[in-house]
Image (cartoon, rainbow, N blue to C red; front, side):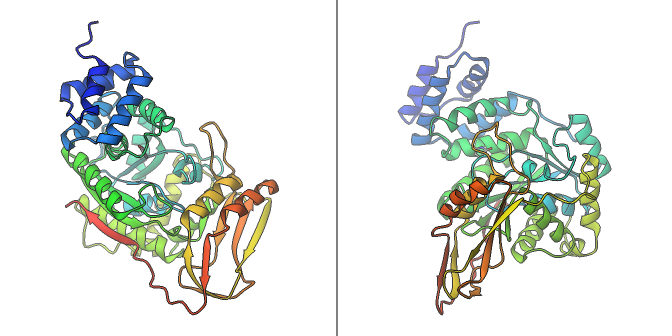
Length: 429
Ligand code: URA
């Protein structure tokens, strides 16, 4: 086959701040998957995009080309409208777990294709796999059946979905080209659009524990993703939410599942409940379900019933207890005063070092490992109070985890802390 373009010419176009045509973008993605464009050429292209950016039209085309590299799921056989949520990842972010059944309890269908965690942010599948016998891998037919029967399904994204993104993401990971907004936005959106949802709410995290450290960066990422979604016919809206401090009171797989169960039964930490209700309200609004009392279904058992059906449909046994760690280690407040800072990144790194996360794709995770805390920002603590607990099956991990906590908690006498806003902005109609 005679190739219509040469990769080196397209790389030079981006190096010189030029614009790639639709045909050029379709070719380079397809040729990369076919192995005609070499890894070193795609790495140079990714770096040129990182440094020089892309026009919106190029980003939309790039996303579409990655979608076209694989299959696109079709939920048109369902009577309910489909709506999904994607979070850019944060510490203690287990919102998907109560959110999917909550939204389904109002009659919308939630197809949630998820991933495993890498680094300091956890993965939804790792969390659910702490439930005895729960199976992440479903065929497309099984997924559709659970959606029909229950209304919500959380499962692994199959290999057939946007394979170009899988190859490109692995390359970006080892070439310092992850933090490019056009590449992050097209990577996330190619998978969500290929998944076949009709509507999507994005939770773009901002702050120390998030990918996007500033509101400006997060706004740009959110705007880019909303434009890509809407251009592909997926009704898309984004919330910008605070990730300077970890969400809730737990980071770790079984620990976060336990917290989700509390939320589904009318309890749980206020920030988790508030964010779950806000995201559910936005998701339901996008599929035309408004003027409903969203929070009520967390208190009346309806969301909890959906959760039980959803977990059972994938073999999960909720009658068995969740794993608890063989060892725990308590940290106490170093002084008396008000907690003025609690660093999400430090909590994420500690949970990861305790065994809740993985450093390489092939690592296994501990179900019970993680961090719990019993305070929130602005709370008064006394010197010597136990405030943080580390959990691990492997005692030797405590030393490195403790290292991560060196400056994680700031306590100041007589300080007055204004609680940070949880929702920092909204993008999209
Ligand atoms: N998550 C993704 O799926 N892709 C990125 O590029 C970054 C985060």
